[in-house]
Every structure is written in structure tokens, then in C-alpha cells.
Image 1 (cartoon, rainbow, N blue to C red):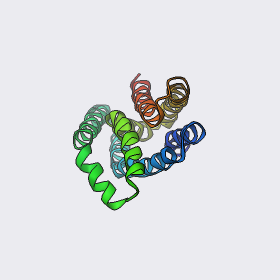
Image 2: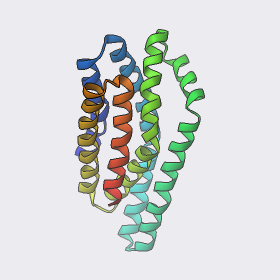
Image 3: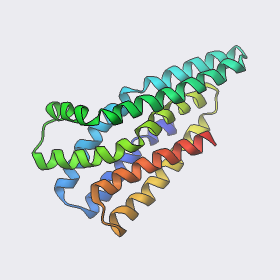
Length: 189
């Protein structure tokens, strides 16, 4: 439960840092960007649930080959879907801004944030598959450890990129992307 509850913390930290150290347009942009990114994130939640179910079923049948096979299939699927969304981001963002309309400046701010965060989307989707696998094999503490690493890295880098380097929305977005890759690396380790 804690691992699932920790998932939105990345957007919260980003919003806090921008709210504290940037202007209201940036804050509105990150709010819109976090909503759109969240839809993408939760839209691919099937990677977690299907991997958890299949891994649990195979683990219950004591079929360790199948348990490993589910992991070996799920992580590349998450990476590939994330890469596809990254490649198609221009068209997808245009469509998203037709649904979630705002002023040009706020849409521009949201696009900056989302474009930076999308560098981490392949890791994000691979991570949710890996966390599902951990839950399926009754190692949910590992999923929580991944979230802890992700959130600590994100908080530290967001503050550094915004306060020290002045990168604003791009800084919190890229900090989140780097943190997603660190969370995946921690889970794989």
C-alpha cells in the first residue's frame, strides 16, 4: 500500500518546488502537466496488475521459469511503450491540449514539464511492471524501496536543478526523469 501511495509524491515534490521558487504560470503549467502525465502513467497500470497476477499465479504453481519469464517480458514491454509515447509526444501533447485547454503560456509551461518528464517514461513503465512482479512474488517491500529511492533522488535533484541551476520547470521535469531511471536501477539491482 505504501508503494502505491508513494507514486504521486513525485508530482507533489515538483509542484512544491515550483510553487516555492517559480511564478504562478509555472505552477499552473506543472499542475496541468502533472494531470496529463498522470493519465499516461495510470493508463498503463495494466503493466503492474497483469504482471502481478501472472507472477503470483506462476509462483503459486511453483513454476520459477514462468515467474522469471513474466518479468523478462514485462520490463521490455514497459520500456517499448514508454519509448513509443516519447517518440509520439508532439502529436499526443497536441491532442491532450485539445482536451485540457489553457492559455498558450500555461500550455507552453506544461509542455516544457511534460517533455522533460517523458525522458523517464520508459523507466516509469518498466518500473511499474517490476513493482507488479515484486507484489506478485510477495516481495512488496522491494517495490517500496524503489519508490523511496525514486522520491529521494527526485527531491534532491529538483531542489538542486531549480534553486542552484535555475532550470525551473525543465529542471523539475528532468529531475523526475532521472529519478525514475534511478528507481528502476534500484529495483533491478
